Length: 116
Image (cartoon, rainbow, N blue to C red; front, top):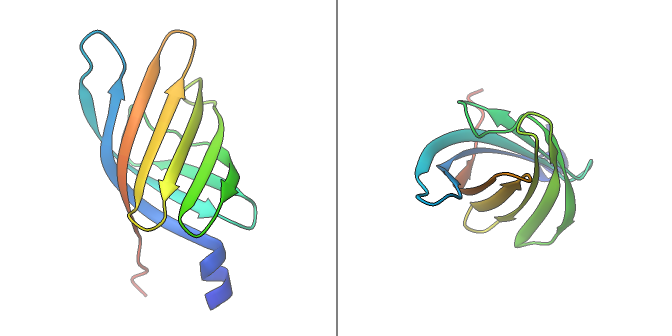
């Protein structure tokens, strides 16, 4: 992998919570991986546990040196997802919504490192 290719794709391991908006919201612990591909302008979610994670590809709508903004529809969750990532801190916030439910995501992501 060249340095240029590494800059085009960012693989992250994320931990945090998913909170269902309701009368008495309760945060659920969550672990997932995200692959940010600047060439294809996509963010891919990879489930490491269930529920409340997505295995879908979302479109990056804009990005700069500090922030990545993405959105799309999750077939797995049956919800629209919009989110942003702070490239400096690794903080990711997402909101998944349907007509009947909304889920807030608060994640802390770190780059994964290759073993070999």
